[in-house]
Image (cartoon, rainbow, N blue to C red; front, side, top):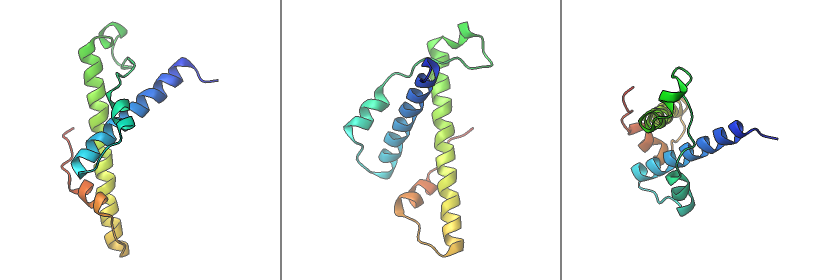
Length: 111
């Protein structure tokens, strides 16, 4: 049986994934399903950063900053993966899907 923390971690991951899908669909000109949009609109369960005291981590601004940091980190990773796929496909003589090429052309958010 999953603990509460494991369930909250899974929920946070699913919400982040939905947020990423909404962002990518918008960038790629695709329609996002209403279910994914509703999931992306959910408020994330709070989580403390390990390097910050719990009292500070519970502040809404800190929670928002943590959420944004993680979202941008995921977006950077997805763009980088698409860039690598384009390079590998070219080297191996394979076709790259238009969606992956479009994602690879996106500017990575700053660190």
